[in-house]
Length: 171
View 1 (cartoon, rainbow, N blue to C red):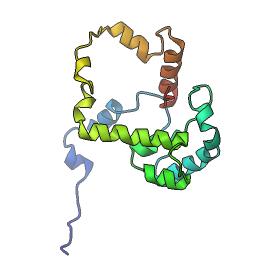
View 2 (cartoon, rainbow, N blue to C red; view 1 turned 180 degrees about the horizontal axis):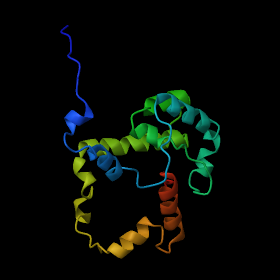
View 3 (cartoon, rainbow, N blue to C red; view 1 turned 45 degrees about the vertical axis):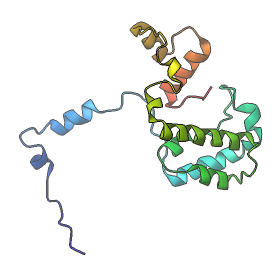
View 4 (cartoon, helix red, strand yellow; view 1 turned 180 degrees about the vertical axis):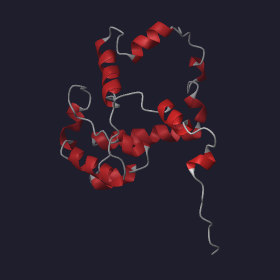
């Protein structure tokens, strides 16, 4: 195999005559929230599965209540590719599709299949008859929603949870 040449560039060569360019870039791209970045990767995903395994038996009864830590909270590991649904199924020894958690994993995969087969659903309704619903684009309402200040307690609690932790209960 041919030898790959080594890069011999410095920041000054990449960003000449603008020594504060890196500092400006970092400032412009700093986190805009005070949420710590969660552990990531395969091992962290396996650890989260292990922690959830202790809650699995109660999942069907606790998953719908935001005040109870009854969900798996492994979606981040699916999303970043650290773990896969088959790995979770194998790790938790799920065999019965009537098991509520197993069923939820199947639904998750179903909707990814829909997205794969119909990528338009990212920007329009799955059923075209809903594409022309009237929608009020009100910046004040949108800001109230983002800040958890709509006056609807479950909505506001969810948005405050998202803003504080970076995660929101699925209900």
